[in-house]
View (cartoon, rainbow, N blue to C red):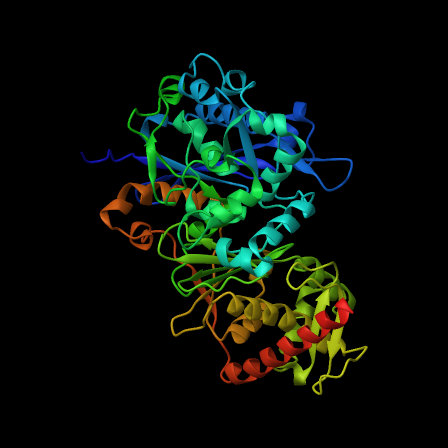
Length: 532
């Protein structure tokens, strides 16, 4: 049966500080957006930035019921705004990666029998074995990470299976900690969800499966076989496979929306719930990456997303299953020293002016006369280093550059690092490769020119305020046609196209191949000296 002309698709994002929603029509036009800020609109939960930082400074959690109550509030706000829920054909969503939710025994029955006269948070307030969920900011599981790597055969062995070495924030290690320190709660747990599959469960009225892409961020799933790794499960907690359920493709349709939402808000009975995924995979969908593309988000932290076919997991960065193509993968690398470091150099070398900063880039040549800089104002994730390192064309350590050399050394060094680690994870620059740039610094054409030159690829800009949210609205639409063989790119072909910003300067490839070789060697020396 043909869809009504006003059919729309919803994308939700259960992020760290807020719950957001967007609605798009069949033609992909954005018709509604709304949000709930946790700190200000749900003050009874006393969060700061959406979380509680525990006294040890390591454990960081969020109240599960806050997320449930936020959904109550968001849907009521949409209702007051006149949103027509009866037009929703499908919905999907994302959640902050690595957070885990522990449903108490009997919760499935509660989900299946939600009474439409009451808000969700009243109906589900007693259904969680752990009331505060560990989230991605938590760093309290060092012992559990060490144990996992010991049981599996080392950090690289864990990465070879799960796409990442053991990380403290990853859900599997959080589960191990809860089993060890709160065994009663673990025993009372009927199902463990990620934030994404927890959110999908609310809409489904039943336990929703973890999708392949978000499941890749747990240190539990074999990303090549697309199933839980018996070795990792055994090293984590007993009976874990039953508590997790089997993972499913990220494009899967889980079923119809719960009758609760039909009766309380007027959703159609046949509104489909497409698997929810992590916020980073959701952003890949929102940016509409294609095979061979690389996306660079230039913000407080810089993040690199890549669409790859033949991943090479390493102990740096992450490889996840691709959220829109089950035969492909996405790689992700996060760099802490992003915009704040750029702003520091702008202040010290350009008088606080971005225009002067840009003049510094234009006033220096590609390769910076052989000068290379590495700027780690705070302990970096990749590589694990801190400090400022400057080298001349002879690879000798120097104390100073000129102001213009310093500006170019910073920008080139940041982008050389991104290319280096992208290639380590399996990324290859090919004819047709595009770099998609987002975030605050993507408005600076001179910074983008350096990015284009270092990657030897054209840079496109894309203006997305809610990329994960929008990506999941796209995924909801795609989920309905994916089984018929329609690709994600075909399903969203009418979406706004990225705009070409800059193209590589002639001769850039030769210059930066040599700079990349030197950067790799110099970084190895720094890391070796740091360990001594």
